[in-house]
Length: 206
Image: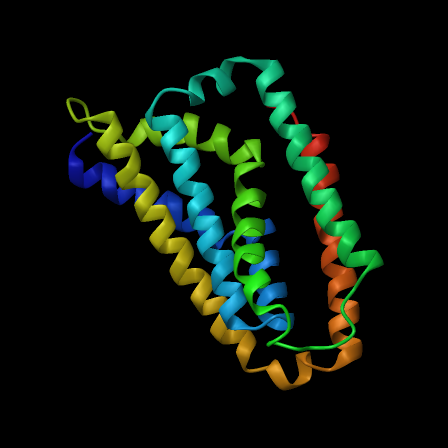
């Protein structure tokens, strides 16, 4: 596979993956709707950081352990499921009842970044995807280390642009979404979605 063919094929596959609705999309939409675009972008950056962490794991060969070890896969899978379940139950049983963008500003910066990053890092599906997917698009004779980070960077750029589109689109409905009852029920609905993802992750297999 030539360099041009590899980049074209990977970019198409990564674009489809990026546009497919999933946990990251739900997190961005919920955060943009309830917390505002700035915090949603922080969550997006956290998701990007999680992608680079997985890319580093794959690039340095540690991802092979996850691919062949059932124990390693199961441990990470259950950690991810527990984290998503905790996040979901927090939203269900302690939903916000008001919108105050200035409240807890310093805490929120790290909080939403970490939520985005942990939601990505603790999802073994991302790791398995990268381990099995990325090597297919590394041209023969080229550095796996450099190409792995290049492919991850392409995925991250696409994800960031998509997150910005989601954030800007959500902004048009900001007045309606700032309604207190809307915020409360959006938290509950999103919490239920996170719990669904947690159950789905826990029940998944390779």
